[in-house]
Length: 188
Image 1 (spheres, rainbow, N blue to C red):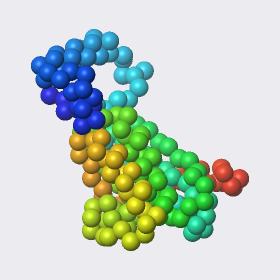
Image 2 (cartoon, rainbow, N blue to C red):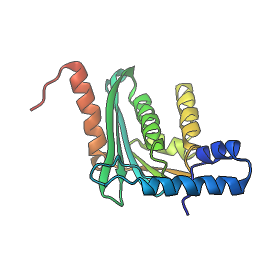
Image 3 (cartoon, one colour):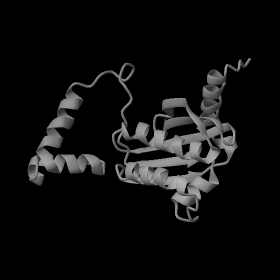
């Protein structure tokens, strides 16, 4: 049985208060989706359920300085990258960029409704603050953490994992590519 994300469960309960009606609606929606299945070579990826991996990175040139975020959403069952995203976010510190990258990544991942999202970050500070191992001392982090917690509540299960920078190269590349394009830096 597919487990729906909490946000969808709440919407479904609001429309269909009776659990039997909810089950019938979901069964009919799944049947309809399966009957109109598009061949996999043309289908838009959609991982409803399952586990996805999100790699995020944020960085700035100067601290504070021009900053960017990079996000890579990966499906381990298909062994493929579902979505990549990088953009400049203005003048920020490295830590604000790291939090902003995670927020962007969580928004992207929410489109795919995974049952478990494993977020890989190369910022030990951010991971330990989100996991409750470090206190949040800077007031500027508080609204970002609140937004992350709000986004996190839309998933059945989310975990935050520290990875060394060399295991986060693709997200780092997206950060640097966005900054290079914005600053007009040419790379060979």
